[in-house]
Length: 233
Ligand code: AIR
Image (cartoon, rainbow, N blue to C red; front, top):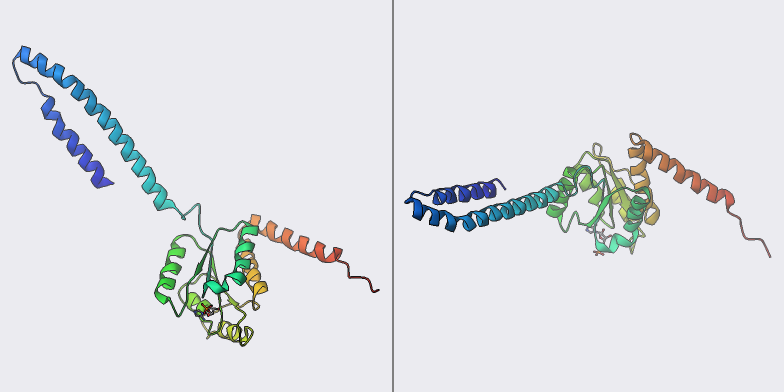
């Protein structure tokens, strides 16, 4: 932008001497008459340029502030494969219910480690408050995320074909001392609970979220109270 502004100023400065009339009076009159429309055109051009500059400035400012405070992306939801989305969408759904902004990505600790690292850094600059990571099988994703950030990172073990998610659970939960991964239940309940855990952490300092969480619990209890069992025939 600075470069653009500079070149516009330079162009205006170059035009200025051309408007100076140094010829004899009659010729000068002619020259002025000739220059009059040119001057009008140049001021018109200047205002058009000014408009264009401010439009570009607005565009750049919008791009720079996109995803940043105050419109921050609070929760980073990541999964090892798009095949995990059916389960992990429960975490996203719960974010929506509590009005938390989130970004969900399929990035693998094994298949795309560099992109995963980049995304974690990017999320941190965008005001992320917590990560939720779900993977299946040799599920190292949550641990790898937790190793690269001090933001709370919750693990969600995916149900797997041959071991029904037990492999994912153990791979996620068995973290070495020093890098914790609070690990949820296998599957959909775990994904939804991961967001509820994030909400609980954030509710410590956010009274609105605290109220929402209390309301959520009250509604849940009410549903259980009202529930009836089918009568025996
Ligand atoms: N996965 C992907 N990269 C590393 C791991 N552990 C997991 C995914 C998914 C499973 O492998 O999280 O649960 C199978 O992935 P796909 O893409 O073969 O369906």
